[in-house]
Length: 320
Length: 246
Ligand SMILES: Cc1cc2nc3c(=O)[nH]c(=O)nc-3n(C[C@H](O)[C@H](O)[C@H](O)COP(=O)(O)OP(=O)(O)OC[C@H]3O[C@@H](n4cnc5c(N)ncnc54)[C@H](O)[C@@H]3O)c2cc1C
Image 1 (cartoon, each protein chain N blue to C red):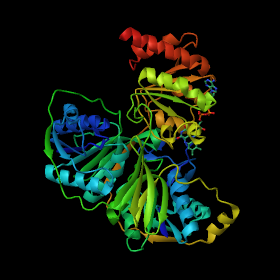
Image 2: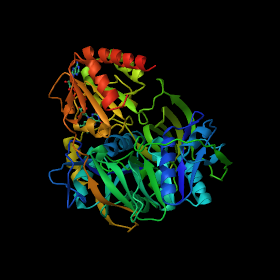
Image 3: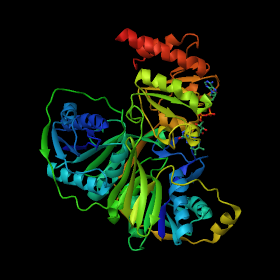
Image 4: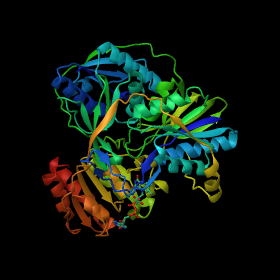
């Protein structure tokens, strides 16, 4: 089947999550004997790197901005028509989640959101996806000829090989924008995006006060990890809302999730139990989180975390 | 302001999720159902606030069987004026969105609001699909929204930050945390809800594009490996050499 992958862009770069979506789309096209193409927009400088993840044919709509989801959907629509795509792939991130359903409804293409694996290609087209906010999986069959998938970041491994981008300028008519931008606020931090992060250090009410997050940030910094938190901590404003993970926050699937002073309530676990390895640090040996953990330390965060920072530093020093 | 709010039913967040009939359907036994939190806390309450300051009417719509009525009454108790239930089993987002778009097509709503996603299927699809089917502008993940005349100013989350947008009405908005504070229905609201109109309309029989063939629970975790707090180096060693994640 012919595959079209949509790559979001922001601040002069194609989003990193698109590398994984590109690998995913390229693999499906190869296995099913089709061709894969990528569509992206805006002024971006990393198309050559993007091309190394399996799709070198890139349609680039340089003059398009990202504001109106309806225009971006029209862009994907036009690219799908010009490439004869049967399957459209988006990353399950803010932009992908917003425009994929629009495209799906316009094309009457059955859609699966939050896929975590490759579709079955022999017989029915069935995709595995996260449901009940990570408490279970569903295998969903798409019944239409045209299909749409949004891929949850960190779900499949991405393979990289030498390639040069073969970029075609693309300027379809997208109609008028119905939405205009008034202001953009970029948040600070060292820029590791939580949904895409491979390593995450998270902390909860056990830390007792916002000024105690220094050691959590140190640990994240040493590991090259993103920071996250439990909901009550975001609710009282100790941490920003976008760090809140769980059933009513965001769902993540990092390789490593370190939970410090978080009890492991069912709503919290829902958002993180797709993590490959979970480490729990908690003073209470009965904390429910230990049942979901791979490694645990029953101990005081204020004692354990600084030691952990030192131990990670030591490891990094021995590696360099 | 004439506002339509899409309301879905979802299992309470403390529910243990199990399946029946060889894992082909969700086991509702013993499960308490609630109004999907994003629909209730954010979309509905913000719609009510707008009505309170600007006048107008808030209608809620659900696609579902009679089992949806308790949660619809709850939304009426919180303050919605009237309710519409499209009598169909919700099986797929496109089907649900098509039912809502078919109902809303000729009603002249200024705003159609939905939660950013449900906490059961997490599809995040219905809002965008309704917008596409009705040819209306769409803003997703809105964390703040104000309306002046026929224009809404909306703050939304985006990768790495937030953005303030203006969009002309009518439009479809999906709501995320921040837009409003949860409201607990009071006795008067609950009493009033009993006599508010809840209209049941037939399905427009739209297509269903996908179907769930099977469910699966995540594998049980093996037991946790405990490490002595005096020996934190051992944890780093295990993460590096055994789990190979750092
Ligand atoms: C509808 C609904 C939706 C929800 N959605 C979410 C969600 O999306 N995400 C979420 O996180 N929560 C969610 N919750 C809240 C959830 O039920 C829990 O209340 C919350 O996760 C608890 O946060 P916590 O673990 O930080 O705090 P607590 O439960 O208070 O746990 C603090 C932990 O820290 C430990 N501790 C204390 N001191 C130390 C120390 N010095 N060192 C180490 N450990 C220490 C304690 O032993 C305890 O286990 C939701 C709840 C509801 C009702």
